[in-house]
Length: 592
Image 1 (cartoon, one colour):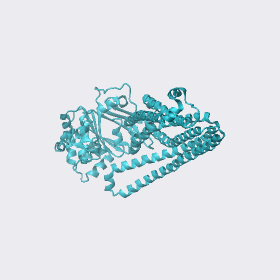
Image 2 (cartoon, rainbow, N blue to C red; image 1 turned 90 degrees about the vertical axis):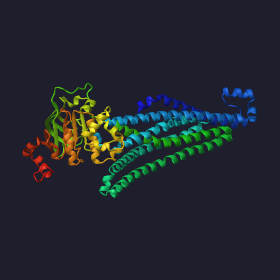
Image 3 (tube, helix red, strand yellow; image 1 turned 45 degrees about the horizontal axis):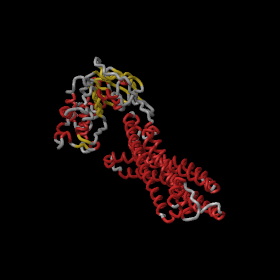
Image 4 (tube, rainbow, N blue to C red; image 1 turned 180 degrees about the vertical axis):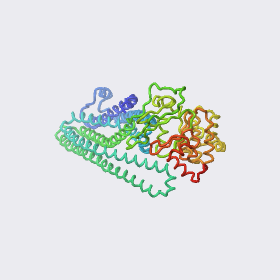
């Protein structure tokens, strides 16, 4: 945060200068009023500085000002105009600095989230991360835009007011200072109380956002299972928790202003009491009391503002803590400074050597002691129980193995740069994700420089060409967020086409044909065999019919490999594979 403030130091400097000038003008006004009361309307001698007195005496002194009261009135108006100019400068400079910092924070947060490992995003809730990037950053922005300079203004006003009060009346000033320790102790207690409450309340706000995001994204499932009432109860419960925390914070915050008013008004009452006695004894002038009350009123306003600033400061600090928590989360996946290139001489596409993976915080391994070799141009099937997606997720290095080594195209996978991995490996995931835009814009994720011919070729292999050509806009037909204006099968086929556009050396289809009918699935598998001879294909599926022509089929059971081989071999040697096949083809037929 300090580095971001340093990058905008010129704007903060202008805001600081403007704030100081505003404070100076704010204190000159009561002084001028005091002189008008005592010197112009009364009979006391002028006590203004010589640079003001000399031109006044040259014009005729007090008599001249009495006859032309518009002159001091105009001076007061001009002081307020100048004060308005400096107010504009302060507001503009603070706004520019705070907006720059907010923009940079959002960019840094988004960039950092993009580079955090899959394991982090599995555990984090999208709604809470959205809150970090939006409402937390906005809280920090508002604090920097307004409250920082208000703190400076308040401190300067109080210090200067006390320094002016002291020469006029030492007893009254000391009386005023007696009020400071109780206010300080109360502000410290309040800060400690509210800070923790704000943290809990904002965490509850994040949970509520996550519940809302989860419900809206899964609204079809909610309605399909008739869970509207249950989801509403859950939302009401979370909303009630948030409301209770915010009411608690509100009750504490509500004490701040009235207690501050009580303490400072006691100070004004004391000034009027002591001032009246001093006027009676001739130790003070009426104008002095007017000035003292004015300054004490200014102190009242500033301390009330300070009370509100403590609330806003507490919330801003809580937001800064949550933003820093995300930014300080290290990426556990390091890429080499001097990456390698694929070994063109090697005929091995992927090799697992006694590979195991345990997810962070998990009690048991999700993948245990996996060893296999996939040569270039082979089709590898993956079937069975838990661990299928975990296995193929190690190939594009979504996760790092906790034991063993993964080799890609003849080199250790950890020796590649992220860009090189993306160039060699394309993944079509279980959960289909399309982005708002057009069919073209989604396909270009695979290769932003792809020609229309390459796009249509990829669509043809993915069995998507027919329905895309029927669209009014063809490649430029719109795609809604998540592809909700397309059927499940259309979404899956477009994601396969997106992966094919990049011409990967290794293509992974992670159960990505589950929404396709058997005829389309068969046509897709036939088309995939037309890919370049050295393209290695990994197919994760629960349909043995989708894998029966694979060069190797890896059978998993609870993260362990229980069989590797072709379809016919596994039917004879692997009980798990045979049970899966027979559950789909009960009459011994190879056609379901």
